[in-house]
Amino acid sequence: MNRWEELTGGTSGEGYAARFAALAESGKDVHGEAGFCAALLPSGGRVLDAGCGTGRVAIRLSELGHDCVGADVDASMLAVARTAAPDLTWIEADLSRFSPPGDFDLIVAAGNVLPLLETGTEAETVRRLAAALRPGALLVAGFGLDRAHLPVPPSLTLEEYDSYCSDAGLILDARYATWEGDPYDGGGYAVSVHRAP
Image 1: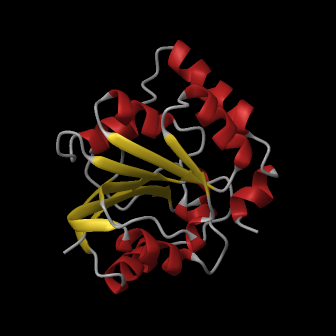
Image 2: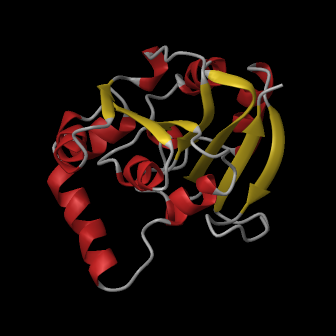
């Protein structure tokens, strides 16, 4: 069982969606991840939202003209995504066992996806995601590195993540502290952009 399922029991879709709806209603920008990714994509780029949850990022990127697919292990999250955007492709899958086609321009793993995987599956998950990228395409992952930025105890360091990416043939392109593109300063959250050769 992955750490997300241990944390939520796989029943948090409606509550998760309601939290972001409330943030949006209060005037908060809930599309930072999508905006960040859109700036890196070619027009009409093909995107995999890995660990898509309720589909917030994929749906926004689709609205911006990109061809999006979402994958998540949590059926309750996917139920919300399918209701919100029935025309998009939503796949129920454990990312450590998922083999998407290798034709994506960008794969995004937002929302602490990687630290919430089943412990010990991180390297295999990165390998599978890397294999789904076109040459020159990007893997973008944002996740917490300390207890202040995670709902569970930290389990993945940047050094480990970079080594998994390197082993999968990816090259670090850039690293930021936020989805707004602030420079990474060694803090407790990082957005990493790795490129396929």
